[in-house]
Length: 490
Image 1 (cartoon, rainbow, N blue to C red):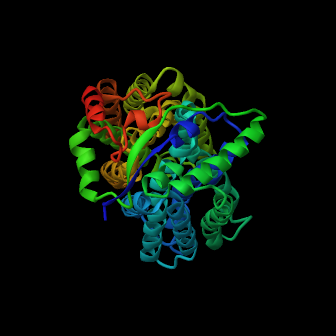
Image 2 (tube, rainbow, N blue to C red):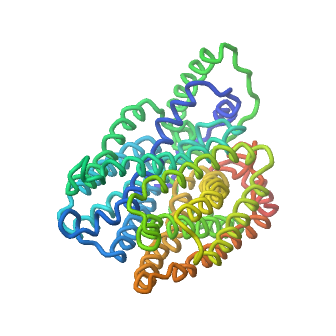
């Protein structure tokens, strides 16, 4: 399975990295990056519809704990999907899997819209998350391998931040859909889930035109296909830029393999790059707990303690702040650098969340939303940088699975326990109508975020402007000794 099929010297990575930014790159961004809009749409719809889903007549008769459990089930599905599809993405290619995972999501979200009982709803949420988790692994790896090195940081962070476009859109869509004078209460929440499937079909049509990763192709013995795709990209980019592309003289020699043994992947993560493993784990746990704990139950908090009937406007403002933060701060991760910006965004947002926990007893719906908007303006860029870090600091052959692995373990630690903890805290605190009962969740999230920022300060990798192959040399490259020296230094 892992036998060599040949050795080649190629300049494909250098040719892709030297490309100017043109319209073709926007095709990649739209075709691949818009999946985060779907994830944001899914999560926000659930958060906004907590009251509609609780109604036993027009909804499903869920309790606050059930709402939190549904969030945990969705995240559990995402973890499982990331691991399942992640290893398939490294084995069979990026394009095959980012088509399959989108189809899985589309079918599952349609099933969610037709839920007739809580068990059906929970099962459909798991499968929906299963598809979305697979998307994270396939899409992040494909984007990084197609985007030029000097743009990689800002593009990755902006794309991951586009989650909040879906969140804002989902929040605003639920306002008319949950208004019984506009849409029957029994159908409004079902239509909201159906909208995700419509958007997914549109993304699928665009995605068909995105090519397979040339980097994946030449390592897996398909150098002719890689050369053909790169030449087509160069011709398109040259025409759109109106200029002749500069020649490159940087090459890399690799030992081609049809497949990479799993034991080699595991050894890479835990033995060759232990510091990077600790770094990624810390970043994912911190951001996953912060986001999944706070945002999955934010709508429930507003309605249960602060008397808000329509949470959509509040959620939309919160979501837009997240996207603006990722878009505004993203370029600084390329200019100032990964280490400094990750450290700052994690520590600062974590500290603000901890302070907010002390003042929960005096907040209103407006003030809590404002505080959340400020906190997550910074946190959104940091959280997006966690995915960026996992996708660029490990060798190409392990990229998708590494993204999946850290997403899964980080999200399992923070994303499953977070919603369950907050759902339990809300149920307990609602009996006394005391919002300060959920402060413990804020404090835990704050500690994890600040801790992850400190880890980044000491173990962060300076990857800005560097090619993926120089950050982490492919496992199949000819000169592993040089790479071992680099790993010892980083």
